[in-house]
Image 1 (cartoon, rainbow, N blue to C red):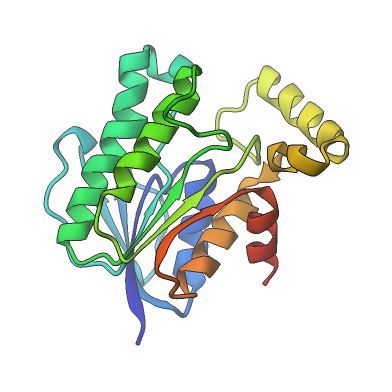
Image 2: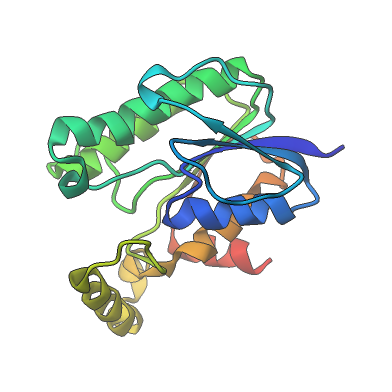
Length: 217
């Protein structure tokens, strides 16, 4: 039976691809996108719900919830603002979608996420992962990409240079370094939508090789 999906962060680098795959997937009869502004997409499956993530309302029923929320400390303006977007918002979302019947929660995290890390960014990501493990989903799927490659809406020169360097260094990263290889945002999104159809219970973590394999299925 076709399911319903909900996505938060559907206008971002990974989330925008994820939304397109969700709309194209026969697995889903309906897709709700929680947005702060309209996506500009018209599709019979799509229901846009404009929300304030600081005051997230009760949500309509969904089976699978996708979280691609995220920012950078530079964009957020402070560490506190970063934690609000990358930790508090996803946790609040997890509570709302669980109450709405979600069985699976799929998260875009980061390679190296660890709640014990001395790096603020990685520590925050790890704290989120730890907190989500305590939420009673049938399945929690955590995707840990490294540098994301793709067309950003507001791409700065430094980001373009970083993308080129990441691609150039990719083949030098072997063995334990493979998980730090850059990866296309579209690949991550494709893997997320594919794994949701597997019906695997429990907590699952996916890094570079896992993500590539899933996307190629």
